[in-house]
Image (cartoon, rainbow, N blue to C red):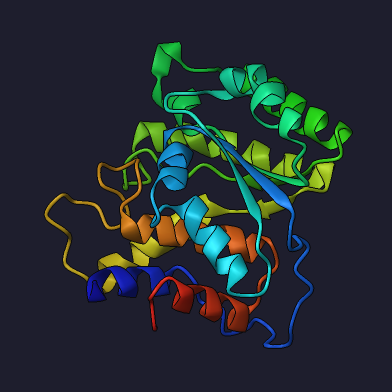
Amino acid sequence: MKHLRSIVTLTALFSTASLLHADIPVKAGDKVAFLGDSITQAGQGSPTGYVQLIGRGLEANGVKIEIIGAGISGHKSNDMLGRLDRDVLSKKPQWMTLSCGVNDVWHGANGVPLDDYKKNITAIVDQAQAAGVKVVILTSTMIGEDQPNPNNQKLASYNAFLRTLQKDKKCLLADLNAEMQAAIAEAAKTQPKPANGNYLTSDGVHMAAAGDQMMALGVLKGFGLNAAELAKAKAAWGDKK
C-alpha cells in the first residue's frame, strides 16, 4: 500500500495550486456520464475504480453526483458514437467524460484510423453539446507502460487531436496520458520495478489501484479541484498522504 500511495502522490504535484476554494463546475445533484471502454467499465464496476473514486472525491467536497456508467469493454470511437444516445444522451446528464482511443489504436487492423477517429470523436462531442451536455475529454492513457513502443507512438497523434479538439470545442480536459507518463518516469527513479513490470496497470493497459487513483485525480483536477480539495478526495479514499 505504501508503494501504491507513493506512486499516486507522484501523479499530483499540486504545490503551485491555490489553496483558496475554486468554484467546482459540477454541482451537487448533477448526473455525470462516463463514456468509455473496458478501462471505464472496470472503473465504474469496482468501489476502488476511477469512476467511483471520482464520485467519492466530489462528495468529500460537498458535491454528490449521480453516476451514469457507460463503459463497455472493447469499444472504439465508432462503437461509442453508435450508442451515444442510448447510453448517455437519453439519460439527460449535465456532464459526460469521454475516454476513447486505446482500442482504436490497440486493435490494429481492426482499429479506427486517425481520420475516422477524428470524425467520430468530433461527432460525439458535437451531439453531446447540442443536447446541453458539458464534456470533459480524457486523453488516452497508454498501451504498455513504455512510451517508445509503436502503439504509444501511434496513440500520441490521437491524443494530440484530443487536446486540439478540447480547445476548439471549449471542453474541460484531463490530460491523463501526460499524468501517466510523468508518474511512471518519476517512479522509475525511486522505485524498483514491480514483478509484472508495471507501476500503474495490471497488464500495461488496464488499471491497478494506483492507476485508478491517478485517473481519478486527473479528472478531479480537470474539474477544477484545487490542492486542498484533492487532499480531501484522497482522504475519503483512505489515502492519508
